[in-house]
Length: 317
Image (cartoon, rainbow, N blue to C red; front, side):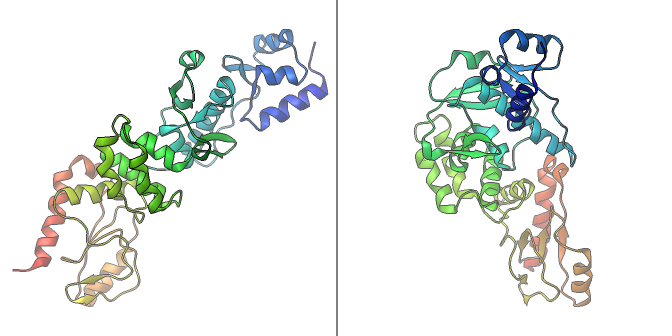
């Protein structure tokens, strides 16, 4: 027996709000029975996404970029897990960070999503592609975005920072601040809320390294690299470029990382127009611009040596 028009309408309406997914319970509520559900699965009209969770239509690929397609697949994977695990399931950790659009993590590999549950759930351990953890998420620590339940930005950082390396952690904090997901005061309150958790003590000093002006993870990593080498930038995105002789002439410019000695800009994001250097050369106020890429992080010594050479030359005898 085929689905009646009213049943089709209910099924498609439900799935449309859930990234093309519907649970077994929801299908029954739409008027279907087990026999017809099994028939739809045998005919491949429906596909089993997770136990008792079905994809009733193919996932539309992203049209803008492969990253947007990754985002759609991630949201669908999270929704499938939440339909399978119930209303208490909340996306957490790296998965929640990606859902918030926080930058700094590797590109999602499509293999698993992280879900927090308030109590052990034997079924969660058996779900392919779902990593569950027993975490109590308070009502004030949960949020909704893109029709998904996920931890708040602050709680997301608390859960993620102790599990990653320092550079990744600071990049995540910088990104969250830059995007306005939480305030500086809210960020600095997070370490005390993480007491006694694995990795919390080791990661506690990292929270003070965050800077809301850093717009990309590459900027963050270069800033940390230079600071560790004893070459911290004098400013990030200063309102006015000032070297040892005073303000530099020329059009206003955003300098991602700025050293006054040597009039050095490290610009990994293409913020400085090449013509600005020509204008300053003509005014006899030369400025050095280094434009490192992700590949340069594989040779950190070469990058810091280049910065040190320019700063030393600007310091004079």
